[in-house]
Image (cartoon, rainbow, N blue to C red; front, side):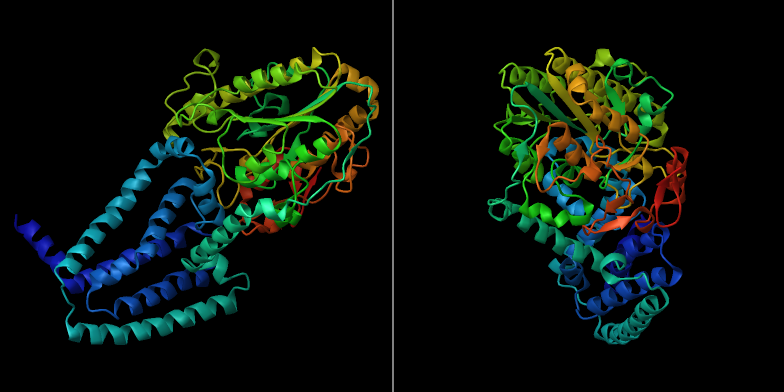
Length: 575
């Protein structure tokens, strides 16, 4: 009882609360010192300067509780930052994190929420009691002694001077240091502004792209029936596909399919769905990503060339470019939206029913785009229980101790994708027409693969597992006979370095025989003119960066090396 009274008395002391609130505000900066790969002078500056600013602000008011509440946005950022660090291990809150809040549907968020409970408990314990104490201080109108305020204001000026000197030292001694990227919470504020700007530009997309045209035309014979299917996978990493050498049999169906070419050294230019998929569906890539606000997608190109088009998605609306490009089709269906039930979770099998129905319409020229749910977490819900091959596949809680179970469930989802793609191929093959299928995944996934204990994707700094993706081209017997040069080129290019974000669109154009000013044969993997280029990554500020310039760690480059790709300092090149 006496201890409780002592604690209550200590917390009731406004001077003690002043210091407590100051420390709580600075906690994220202190934690980031241990997680971010920055120079020592940058780490010191990132604590001293924000601390001095908070100090100066706190010393301006006689009621520290009111000031603490005024600074609530920074408490919110702090809580968000700590949860992010728990999830990814490093990096500040990125622009894409804010955009993910807008483009991620509620069911996906709830699937992940259960696995963030430890981090959520931490931030609740850290921030909620402090906010309660601040509220009590406000309600009871408690004041800091005037003598205390005079002393702390003097100290805060000294602290601010030291903070400014430390910031200047960071700029002077570290030529890579910049406020918008490295100083928390200035970087978060900058990223929020960018997120609002991008959201506004996205909402205005209908106006900025309304007059766009590809000027596309068909070059294939009008007398031959054709059908092409473009499949965009979800969260499937190449490292777990047996056709790329994975030790488990995750591709029992595709390994037996004739006419299939698997490209082994393919990297995506983004580890986020809301960026990667639009690049796959358009002529845009990391080098000119902002041009997306003025362009339309590949469905429009095929429509201009006279094809009947369809878009079927097993994901919900995200109110962004995936929706915009999908709705360009003659027929489109986001099947998760069909019932209005947010808990409706259909399998990718439902897409096959739509494909069969569309092909049965018998149009002479058909183009279908599928957006699957593939291997998106929660993995266990991506395939029927009777299709579980690797066991045990439960529980799937996001904890290192369940790594084997998570991996079993993930591999089962890859086997399910294997079966799905094989059935897409059979639907086309059975029609005996010129047909082709193109597949890749938007990005990969981390599953506690190494000592970093990374999980999921969309981390501000991507890993090898998040950007190495499968890439497949299948051609029907009739198609191979009609266009043998394309099959020969595909086989010749299958071991070359490829960027899925740059080559997916271009390859699909060539497979479908579509000519246009936006076509670039040096990026098509079924063209003899295909040219290897330095692969880049689209960073959080929509800037194209070489892989060694985005903070990828040594382990990731070692993994690239093991897969026949060698890091050579500024460039990733094949052996």
